[in-house]
Image (cartoon, rainbow, N blue to C red; front, side, top):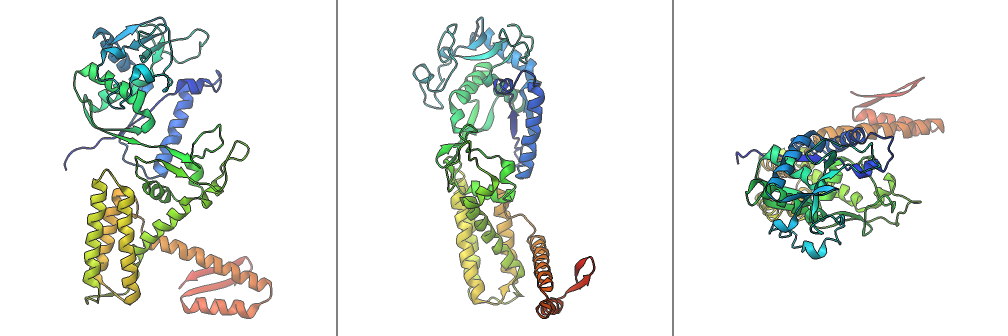
Length: 432
């Protein structure tokens, strides 16, 4: 389609957490630091589709205006502690999550306040608290204070994306109260329904069945994971689970604060199997590229071509079925099995078929953000590492005075175009 797709990411300022680190810290400065870390992690994972980044602190006047308008329309009321949204004034509150706010607000840890009209009401603007002189605050019609949690996202989306959007995403745990509050604020402000046409909620990542938590010691960062695995491997591993389903990182031990997760522990997890699965799909491209080509239609060629088109159809059908990425990837592996069998039975591959295979795998892989690496460069890097390994083994043989075997290795490398030169500073090699 010709529709423009715009994706935004709100870098929130979780002020309470920042303040807990000590009054000597600058919360907004610290937030900038973590924002930079976040962007670097996105780039490392090849997540490049976020076209807009927004800071709540850059939208304070707009947030105040939305909150003021909600108060004018009778959806908000002022108290000594905060300007609150009156949840009883919005009839559809709770419809998205099917939660009854009047009964279940305690389960979701909505902050109590004796000045609220309803327990489920939430703050649009929090007034500065006594004893917190260094808490970030701004002037407003209700006094010095700062925005509540939910109003930030609503305002930023209204200002950057308009009064109605196609897709809104987030973790399943944000459905109530956060997303319910966003809907109430936006629709009360604009009088336009629905504010969001489609919602996508992802489940969380657990470790041995438990939610990740620093206090439990079962927490690991993206940066630590990237010390062990290529970013594409992490993407592939995530894609093996449907976005609506919980992902569980299974470790061979239960981490705790005294025995936390270290990067090397990830080698013993399903991420390692994911790495092997991704390499298997790259082998499809590798076989299609490197096998000797022929213009002839070899036995089984048309059958493989039909299976390639079937794999493409099954892949796209799976993606059309609520982004069923595991099923989509399974279709690629089914084709890989058929191709590997074909390659065992034939010493050549039809040139047009080979080109079709590479094209289809690149096209489908691009949808998921995988299978885009230059396989020839990747193999060149591995060849370099292999030569270095052989040279190192040969040098150890020479140190043990096993010169005959060392010379044999040098001659065999020379026969395949790799020359070695022993110098006082070490062995040099080059491809002739």
